[in-house]
Length: 198
Image (cartoon, rainbow, N blue to C red):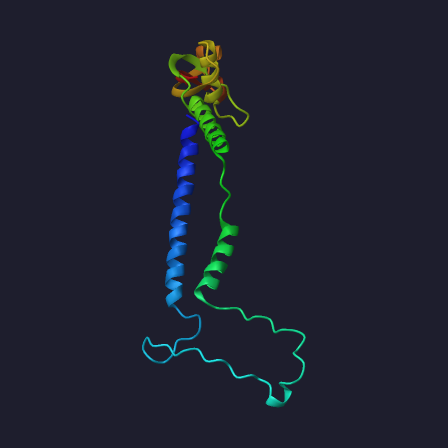
């Protein structure tokens, strides 16, 4: 099983080397027909190269040769430009991993994906019951806490409220005959009647 990625990389390298060699041979063959100097004005006919006349006057020819040779000029031809391109492209290419590092990286990603899926696919059940939603600090009913309590009563850890119900709860003072009912005598309680538990 480990040989397959190695064979694939070896085959890929061989194919890249073959294509590179063919491209280089093509460039050499094409370069033999192209001049490195500026083209002449005639159509496709090049004049033979003439030797340049010496820059110094004839009276100095008998003197000693200059001690330092002039630096060679950069040849702006095809091969020079391709060489620059290849040198610059090597620094921008990413480094290739060996097969073992590639497989280790793949295994680490697969493990992370498996853990994520296991968290998402936890079994959940819908339970029914009746649990009061306690009143939170701002006065609103906290039915998430009620759903958690309902699920914990059924053996689960946490829950999410699906259905709620409300009922009015009054004190016994309301039952006294002739007494006028006051706003603080009754309150509305909310209950979780079904929850999705995990």
